[in-house]
Length: 542
Length: 98
Image (tube, rainbow over all chains, first blue to last red; front, top):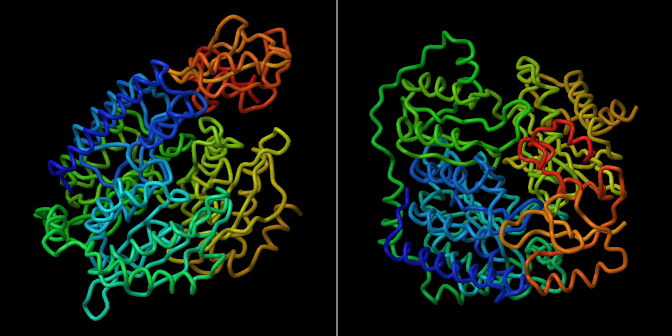
């Protein structure tokens, strides 16, 4: 994992001291809320329905056990004993007091954490593949590149006041586990004739105008990548709309001028930027990459004993192949039946930290699907890990099944939401609680957002649910056919919306249609794409 | 009836204008009638409460009930964590929201 140098630490410490002063001035009445709001947002502090909410950055979703324990400590000391892992691989605390915020950030800084780039119209926290460094199908480890982008983007003077927020994802596998093409910039690291470079996709996103990012460049050499991205951002910063926040994202710019025109302008800008010498020297890349060297693997390649059926089920569903023989990737589900997607108690966070320290070379990952990953577990240790997870109520074997639901906080917490998301997720998970039924349905990605901002990624759900306000009453629209993976697509609204119970019934009817019409190994989304919407509409609206 | 609500500057807690101060309990909220805007501006100036705004509510025998579900959730707490609401010992309290 990357470790701060003195410069990194000094920057974060200085930011904490600066924000402490700003908070003190606000509490003393020396600043109005209008003056203070942009300052607190730059430090990840939002005002939500019930309290302040602090969003803490977890760069590219990677953290160690010391940092994970600090997250538990913050939950225990300053919040209400739990945290909420988000769809951008961060964590949110829902009950923060303004007077505590500087102390919290000061404690986070002691473990090289902060809340920078979690709000505002800047380049947000870089996201990546939660299996980075462990995936068998990756061409390189994307984390050094994600870290390089973090260093490039943090406090970038030219890109701190963009027209709108800007999200970048980096992957290095043909299988997209990071919804890469639904970001403002998506990078897929690839090799061409042995040379490392990146496919560059620009202009994707969800929200009220969902778009899949077009490929702007099929291969940018690694040596040119920062300059190329600088050019991409410069063109956006110059031409992105600032008069209408709903049309200010880069996806709108590219949609309006066309990918070809944008590509041409970036090429022109790149020709200039490349002369500025911002791409790092090889020595700096090697310095960063050294932090992500593979751990000292030493386990023999022994298959775990599958005598315990619950353990075997968990192995089959939540444990994924590793590129190193003798090791496996463990997915910890934060989706217990009837629970709140993405929430973990401080005790559970501590348990996961302990397991990472003991069994996963001290490393964890947060996934955009609101789960946790132990990336380097020896197969000989899987049973012990499972037992510890089971004791902490963290062993649900439902990864990628219908109960592994992404849900935003919705109207239970969020000031932007129009409808509650969590109760719908709870009812659907409970309706499909039977494990055999879930396994029979197979991979089915269900995603719920409580408003059009789409933090719950509903556009990318095989089944998506969008909560809307219909004359003061919660109403839920259903979409089918979305995907955030390599088969990326935007879901389509199937028809009129439903009330809370009605949408649960409609989901069940849709799964019945799927079961009746599926062929071979088709997933729900495959069947939908083959047969179209009509059979589903007929069953649901009949 | 009209209520004035906001979030406490320091704690962030939801607060309701009582006629001579602020309370975290919606039952204490006063009908501000036509005076909402004036009180709002005065309180914004005092900088004790964040983002105050005026809402519609219905008077009931148990106190005011905000017209919109969002403000009812603000008044009580998250519907999915009754233990974190203002009435954790009353499992039926959530019925008031829906």
